[in-house]
Amino acid sequence: MSDVLEKMKSRRSIRKYKEDMIPQEILDQIIEAGTYAANGMGQQNTIIIQVTNKELRDEISKMNGQIGGWKEDFDPFYGAPVMLIVLAKKEWPNRVYDGSLVMGNLMLAAHELGIGSCWIHRAKEEFESEWGKNLLKSLGIEEEYEGIAHCALGYADGEYPKAAARKENRVFYLK
Image (cartoon, rainbow, N blue to C red):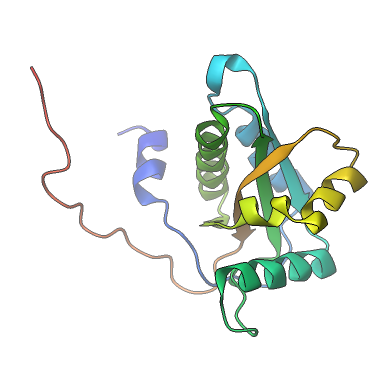
């Protein structure tokens, strides 16, 4: 089996991270993989925001937890020191699909490079808020974007999870 197919089968979501920061060279490779995701009509209507600033990361985590209704001391990013936020142009009809493909590429690239990842929701609600709109403006992003997801990244703290057995009757053939 090819390395790519094996990585697809072995990647798991990580929910406990070490505090160690990921080198920028590795983050750049992961982000580049995200920019090569398949996208509707080749329009490339997604953007990625890298967050490594601990104060901002913690602020986003707190907001995400409030949106999710979690207890105040719960970190929905499981201690990951890095998050990549994927957004897509709001008026683009394929925004959720394109952003989801970006997320898949980010997580597979991270796995290939020995970095754990986890898809975290609630980016949509974050970037519908004034806080999210102001963050985009502070980056010089004037167009309307919808938050698709966060990709939590870090070095796994503990044993890497094993894949659950695949359920039966999920594939059907029309020959």
